[in-house]
Image 1: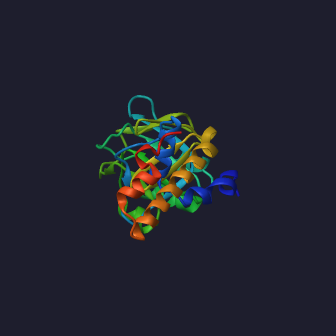
Image 2: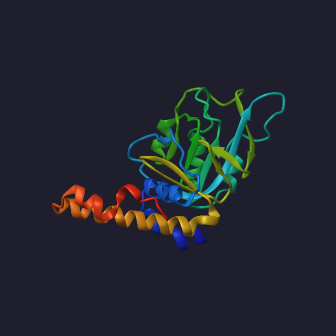
Image 3: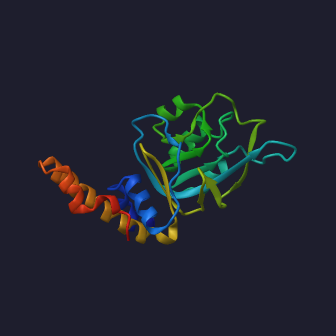
Length: 222
């Protein structure tokens, strides 16, 4: 069992990406992305340390291996493969063979600042993919893998190998590995406040009184 699984996974799994995003806002960290969603509704949550992969345009310099293979080989069970394809919508950088290979390795899923293809194959493999969309075009002759496990950008957020990737129906948030405990503790506080508010509202309390009691408008104050 990894240190992340042992110390943090179960705590993160109770939370939503919005809890974590709010905690990061309160503490001054940038981690919220936008526009990258699960490709089917039933793929609800993804969570794990990042294995990063950056794409670049195909050209004279050849690629030694098919894109994604090095990232899958480097990944451990529970990791998330994070692909920076610059938000491109005209070409794929992930498909069915990669999804099946990652599934066999125990990878939690793949998140893409760009598009995937072979979505039916990913669904059949029950392998979770978050992306900006799907496209039929192959990556061949269009993009190559520039590097693996280096710092990248993903939806405007810095991501390094080992940073924590969390995704649900709202989107993706990236947690810097140095601040996991600080961010997680704050997110748990915000989660509990919201749960308490919802419980009181469901019990019939006046919403304005609940808002005033919990000072919800200033919930991000330290």
